[in-house]
Length: 286
Image (cartoon, rainbow, N blue to C red):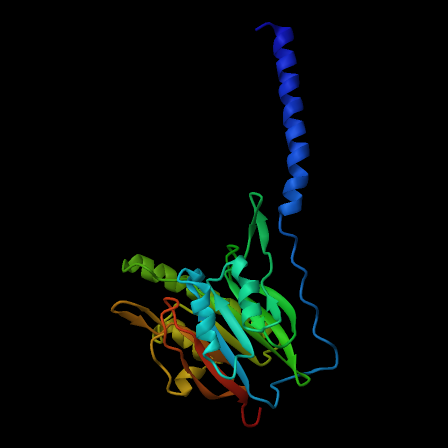
């Protein structure tokens, strides 16, 4: 091929490429998920504290609804009355709105985190609520891994915070893996505690899949500032099970501002985890 033909070929190739990009870019922008609108700031004039009424919190690792969304929704619907707040983990974007609608929870927080290589990155936890949500933010470690979402809410003119978390799992018996993942959970727990202190140590409920049995240094760290509300109620049944492996790794942790009055683990197999729930009220003197 002579030089004039090569130049012509290159020009045609560049022109076709630019034309393809000009066509593809608007299509990509049309279907690309828009940036999530941030939650508003909490209204001024509200009091930081626990409301007078009892509130129901539930947490559930739904295992990406691999066993069907009807089953996981049904597990939550077994609660009567329904939860005021539902903190979900291992949830995918396409399931957030259908689950919230099916459960009658009009307020939700599931923000688009960022784009990587042109692809959207979403959290694998979500906050669903019957009460308005404010002050949303992601909880993540310095390596960029987001493991939780936190927001505030106002009930009866009382403002408090709550968070859904999904801490780093241990899935191999290799001692090096056990130590590494325990250290990762330790860093995540410190992020939660640091964020709580930055907020001025308000009433806080943290619930979800901690991937941490109720033993060891990490559990001691979990209970340093927060109460294991289900343990206070004597409800310490397994929350995760695969065949003979039965573990308690899902929790509803709360600052001492809260007092648990009822709670439990909902039995079922819609996920490899079981939902946990707790009714919380203002602690005496709180």
